Amino acid sequence: MTYPDLPNIDAELFAAPTADNVFESKPSTHPPRILLLYGSLRERSFSRLAVQEADQLLAVMGAETRIFNPRGLLPVLQCGEPASAAGCGW
Image (cartoon, rainbow, N blue to C red):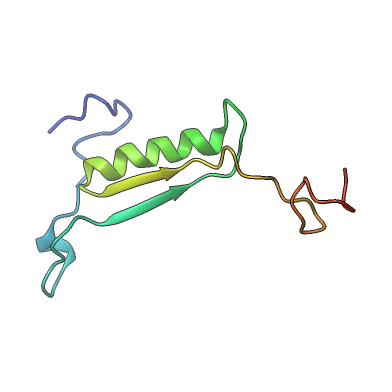
């Protein structure tokens, strides 16, 4: 089997898990559900790119994935308050 969307994967070395080789008891009725997180808000973030790569790999293995995008969240400063809170500034 080849993976055209994942040219960095050697199909001979990559074995997607199956219910037979993972579960000894009754398997779940749905695919594994995995939430992927990254924290950087930069446009070209390495952590975001790594999460997107993991998303593709997990999808090939049959997982149901979602990526949480932190854009829009208020950054928290070292004092533990949101950036917009009074009394704690940069």
